[in-house]
Image (tube, rainbow, N blue to C red):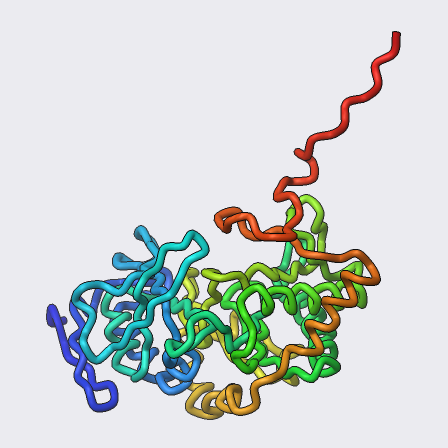
Length: 341
């Protein structure tokens, strides 16, 4: 195999170095295999990434080697890949790449990027999300089947709130449901809506679903990870390759497929055939963005009628107004007992 070769992506030619480098030892998949995979699903993958500030999860030596997240665009970023400045909760900022054409996928793959982590915003307005993302995260003792059950209930909750969700596998055991919205709300408001949706799902399936931030309180339930909507939290994009031995991918699905598929059905080797047959089943996702008004009204009712306010933010996030104590319940200080005598 040559030390480098060139691949055509749209109108551009992208140079791929060390194409025979093995990225997935158990499957024998190489850098070239990953690049060809992204070419096979390029339009769908780009639909999920277009104009979004994107963090690259890179594995320069394959999944057996070290990995890291690259947020800041490198100095040698091609001039044809635009960037956007995003602000972190710390007050710092960074310029992140924003894919706008298929060649950007190959450029990133050449850098060892397996998984793309786009922000839920577009480069024109990085402070107002246009997606509400719901992460259904199986806890110990639960798995994909339980996530599917929770997703079925979630589908109904979203419909009642005038929203449309688009499910996909996480590439692991869980499910992601992306909800396109008009970019009229802040990160704080979108997170508040996600909490309200999670709480409504929890009320309907109390033995199966939880919004408890602390692991010790979750039990054998599906955790609705509302903090994936906090600023600077991202979720693997549709069609992204995940760093597990069988080379699974995050697969967009139709609702009616959920009960008859398994995450293992969708890999670097199998997704190209599915894509060739069905195309991008989420192609229409951005055509009818939803309105968060009803979800935010639900949040307001939860607080007024049930005293359900905010929930803890991630540990790296600065303390927010109205946030409860960010202390694990079992470690919270207990009042001293009365001393007799």
